Image (cartoon, rainbow, N blue to C red; front, side, top):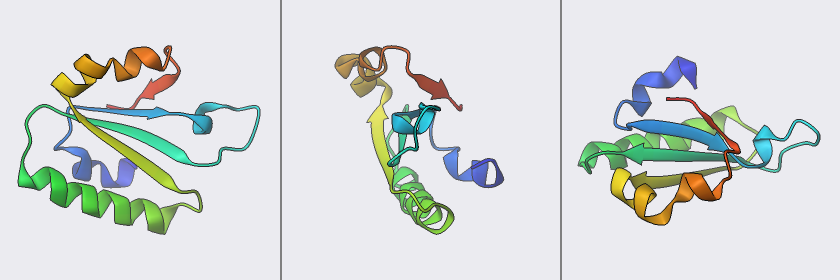
Length: 89
């Protein structure tokens, strides 16, 4: 991900969550939360590239959850994870 960090410039915050953070057993997928502050066509283009990149780099399926700052606040997505996430950006 660090090699392709410029692809994530459209996003305000990036979080890793789910089974990939459990060190006691093998993960079944990679869950990533991408939060943006303002919607643009660039976000959609970047998402396509990011999805393609993860397909090439990983043997595990990758699930991208994309929310605006407001959507995250309204759904309390991070709060529902009970601090079981890793902030990457």
